[in-house]
Image (cartoon, rainbow, N blue to C red; front, side, top):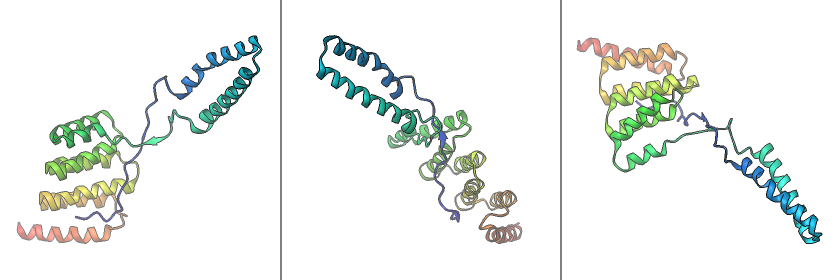
Length: 207
C-alpha cells in the first residue's frame, strides 16, 4: 500500500554532552600562556611584543564572546539526528542480520530512538525480507513518535506491509481497523474505511 502521507524526516534526539576538552576549555587553557607573554613584554619593555599582546588579547576576547554567546559549541539543546553510521557500515559489509540485531539493541537501550526503528524497518523490508520485523519496527516507531502525523504514517506503513508483503487479509483488516480507531481524522481516512469494508466483504466471502 502506498503511503499517502508525505515522507517523514527522522525525528531529532537531544545531543549528548561533549567531554570537558571542548572549545571553551581550550580557550581558557591558553589564558596563562597569553598572560605570561604579556608580562614578559611589559618587563622587557618591548613595544612590538606589547603590540602583539594587545592584538592577541583583543582577538581572544572577541572570539570567546562569539563562541560562548553565539556559536555555543556545546550544543546541549541543539537537535541532531543519530544516523547509526556504525550499524549502516555493518550492512555495507554484508552483515545485515548483525545490523538488525544492533538496531534492536539501540531501540531497547534508547526509548526515544525513532531513527533506529525506521532504519530497522527499511533493512528488514528491503534486505532481509523479514516482514514481521518490519511491521514490529514500524509499530515501535509509532509508539515513540512525537507527532500524530508521524505516528499515523508509521502505522499506515505497517498496514501496507501486512497487505502487500505478508499477504494476510485477516491481519490487514485488524491493522486497518486499529489505524482508523487511532487516527479517525487522517487525511485518507475515508479511502481507508472504504478499503476496510471491501476487505471485510472479501474475507467473509472466502470463509
